Picture 1: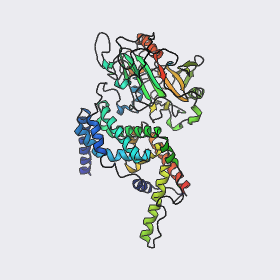
Picture 2: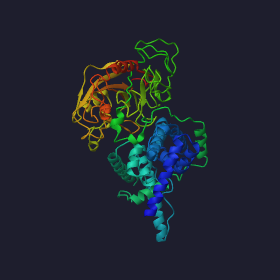
Picture 3: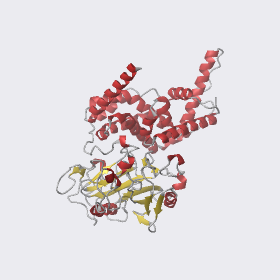
Length: 197
Length: 338
């Protein structure tokens, strides 16, 4: 446990050093920070936009904006929450400007859409896998019908496994509000699942 | 499984399967190419934009809130000097201009000495600027005199921006003009557990004023009838509070559309010396823009929190500049009114 803690601390310290180097204008250091975070940023943008091209654009806008604003970030330790916030804002702004995305995101799933009706299987293991696929597909469709803010907080918590304090910082809200919003987003997902039935 | 409670594992598994694994090849290079040609902004004081101040310290940061007044673009003649520094501090008298150009955003403003005598050189160069970000209801511009700085609590893409007096160092002055767009209004600025009003309940000026009047421990006074600014209806509201930093440590009057909170400063002071916040609520084509000004001569709560002595006339001269800023505010290109 001590070794793991030491490893985690070392990683954090190395990241802080990279942030400080990038903050002082070192693009190579910023490139390393991007390498470690671009997939996460992209998934966060996609969770809000549900569209690959727009998610890529929003990710690019956000990371370039982060580079530009980095000298204004005083505490390197809060870099991830700060970056998530920029990504979420970029995605929300992109979405606002592209009404068609709103139509896509709230479009109810049509019966038989996607891969929700796989061929019947006989063995229990296959049956279990099929159930999981159906469940995943239903949850995914329900997720797409949520508000972008709800999708973002669910993605940060369940996929990226970010601490609630960092999520709060990412969204610019108190920790208590972040917990409440997470609870509300989960409830909304379950409600949307009912609509999928 | 429909209709039953989902487990954490089910949600995590489904969302991992649903969301893309990562960015497509080539996006990294696209971004780093763009970074190579992008200059970092490093002219603002380190105090500004410090996101680690985000919530617990927001009240103090809000002390540095930039207040920008919005004054009838449609009613006032254009002024010269847009898009860059003025040769001299702006006056209240408008100068006609035949070719209005889009002024630079505050974030792109050149920096200059904070007083004619020199001193710190990290204030905004005097000039006409527009609020930072393309998120505002219309293009909101103002004339910034010598000795002020921009303060933003979050990012450039938030509808929350401020111009404060001073150079922004040592915690900032917490005295100036703050702009925000209203999204979800708190039922109690000091108790997040009470939730927010529905957006339809606070969609008009009258509804927002009614909500402010309902806040426990706050007193909202409407000193006069609505006026018209840049063709848009505006209502002045003076807000005071008996709450203090102990029972309202993370005050939030409303959120902005991007999700950040607008705090309860200066009504809830950092050390119990609260002041009156002067709110100008403007209905810009259905969007409520609020211009909050610390229009009092006293030492600000933020300054008191830094140990600066309480002085009843510390900002008396600054109030003249503040009123000039407020009078210079214009809104252009806003949505058509119904």
